[in-house]
Structures are given as C-alpha cells and as structure tokens.
Image 1 (cartoon, one colour):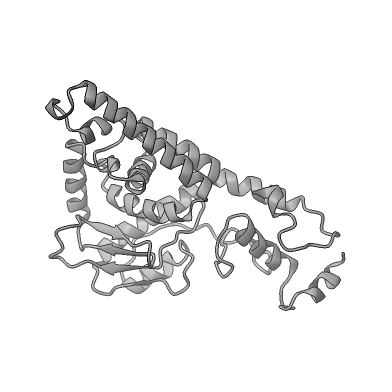
Image 2 (cartoon, helix red, strand yellow; image 1 turned 90 degrees about the horizontal axis):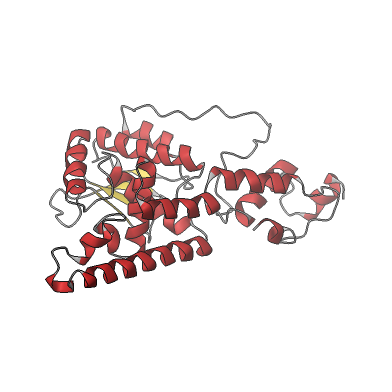
Length: 289
C-alpha cells in the first residue's frame, strides 16, 4: 500500500507515517497512553533532539519545564510550597531513572507534604493519581536519614537519593507489564518463604532476629512488607548500583522487560515491518510483544 492510500484510511489526515509509527509503537508495544509523548520517537521534521542534561534550577517553573521531559503528563505540576532544593533533588532522581532505563514515568505531579506528617519519612507515591508527595528537606538531611535507616537494615541503600528512587520505583511498578510484575511477585514470595524457614530454624519467636531482619539479609526490612515495597526497595538498590541478591534478581526482570535494550529491540522489529502491506490495527502487535 502506498502512503497516500494509507493516509486516506485514517481519520486524522494530518499524520505522517513517522507520526503513526511512533504512536503505534507507544500504544501497542510499550503499552503507554496514546496521548503520551515519546521523546525517543522521530519528530515530524526528523530532526535529532538535543540530549537531555540535568542542571539544578532556580525556580519551580523551571523545574516543571524540565520534569515534563521525564513524564507522560503534559499538565505535570509542582506545588509552590516546596523548596527548590527539595524539588531539584527529586527531579535529579527522576532524571537518573530516565537515563538508566530510557522511559518516561507515570508521575503526574509533586505535592508538598505537611511537616507534621509523622507516618511518612520523606516522600510517598499515590498510584491513584500518580502524584508524589514530598517533605521539604535538604540534601544533608536526606543523607543523614538514609545512613541511619540503612545502618539498622530498614532501608536497602544509604544513597541520599535512595528514598526518592524508592518512590519512583512505585511509579515504575505500575508501568510494568503484568508478566514482569508476576515474576517479581514470585521472587518476593520465594524469598519471604525462605526467610521464614530460616527464622523458624533459628527458633521462631525465640530467635535473636526478627523475621524481617532475616529477610533483610537479601534486601531490607522494609522490603519484607509486601511485593510493591519489595520492588521499590530493590529498585532503589538497583539505582544505587550496590545490589544484594534480591535486587540482582529483580534487575534481571527489568533488563528483560523495561530496559533500553527492550526499546531498541522492539524498534528494530518495528522498522522491519513491510510498508507496502495493508496495516491492520493490532495485526503485527503479537510479533513484537
């Protein structure tokens, strides 16, 4: 089929083949929203985009402008009540994740957390609305907190950005294919069971260690809570680079389903599609999934 014939089939006659190709790839291969902007896809004029580089900003508006390169949402917003230093530290973590995996994030905005909130240490993520909630804090405070929690085995890493990586991990979790989530859930269940058996051999309630402390040998105490916290703790350790056995297993799953390598392989597959054949919706998706 010629391009002009193909174009007549579609309602939106303003699209070029490159436009269609990028949108089809995003919605059928990466399972991302049709209105999501793929910054890796060719522009209409086929010009190369400038490489994205993080630099600390001086205003919230500048932070919003930069962060929009890292998320799906065009209406991404940040509360004015947050300090620029706090925002810079979180956006830096978002940038790190983007650079490592080449993906945009399911984060719709950043809100300020009440200073009186004692339940959450630094940050939280809501899968309901995709918003991050942050406490105003300094890098020095983040560093001190991370070292303290790591030393007692509660957190997976003493990296100052660790809690930010953890919350971004929750956004990555909801973006993973179901098959990847299931594989990670199986890893969590197996390690939890192994930890339980080891704990029972140590005497159970009479043991010198709690069950979560035995689990922490392979990741962290907090990671024993449930499969989502397990993944986010593993994710923070993956981002740090100093991985225990559990994080190494999770990293293999991400390498299979979420890495830049996956994007590259599927783009190559898409580029091999015959352009002269009639393209039917979903007809070729199975070959790439």
